[in-house]
Image 1 (cartoon, rainbow, N blue to C red):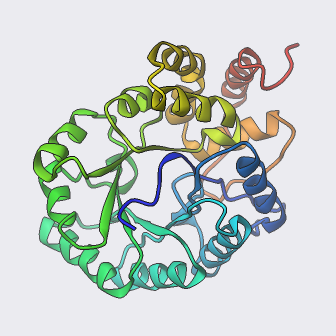
Image 2 (tube, rainbow, N blue to C red):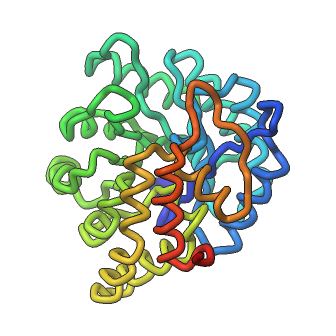
Length: 297
C-alpha cells in the first residue's frame, strides 16, 4: 500500500464535554456525518483534533473510536506525532494495532532538530510499524520547515510514502517530483491553495472544512478529477472565504465556532486555546450565510 489515500481527507475536531473530557458520543456523530457526506478518508488527531493538547489516554481513545467507527469504509490516517521518538513509536504502534490505514507524523521540537535527527526519528518509527507513514510539513505549527531535499531523504525510508505539505508553496511539489519522480504521493494541507495543488497533481486535500461544507469540498475534488477546471474554479472561489477564515483564525477555534453556529456545540476548547472573539464570530456567520450553511437574519 504505497499511497492509500486519495481525495478529501477530513480532519475531525476533538469535541469536549462541559467537564472537559473527550465527548466520544459527539465525535462518533461528527465522523458519521462526514462519511455520509462522501469524504474519501478520515484523519483523527491532526491539528484540528488538538493533538498536542491531549493526554496519551485521550489520544488513544480518539484514535480507537474513529478507526472503529469508520470500520474500513474509507482509509484512516492517524496522527501520532509527539515530542519524543519513544512516544511517537508508541502511538504509531497503537494506531497500527487498531487497524489504521496509515499514520501521520510532524516532527515536533523544542530545540530545533537537525536533518540527521529528523531522519533518525522517522526511521525509528518506520522500523517499528509496517503501515505507511505520511510525513507532515507544517512549520506554522511544528516549528520546523522541511525543505524538498530533506523530504526526499525521508522518502527513501521504505514505508514513508506520503507527504502532506502545508506551507502553501505548490512549487515544492514540483521540486519533489524532480527529486523523487512522478510516484511521490503529495497531499495539500493548505486550504487556500487547494485548487492550485489539486490541479498540480496532489492526490488529495487534507482539510477540516468537511465539518461545514463537505459536499463543496468533494465536488471540487471531483471536478478537478474529471478535468472540469471551469467548474472547479467556480466551486473553489465559492468556498475560498471560508477556507481563508479558518486558516487565519486557527482551525480549532474557527471550526468550533462554525459548528456552534450550525447548532452543534463541541464544548470548551482545551486551554490555553480560547473561543473566537464575538466580532470574528459575526464575520464567520456572514460567510456561512453566504454559503447557505445557516439561514440569514
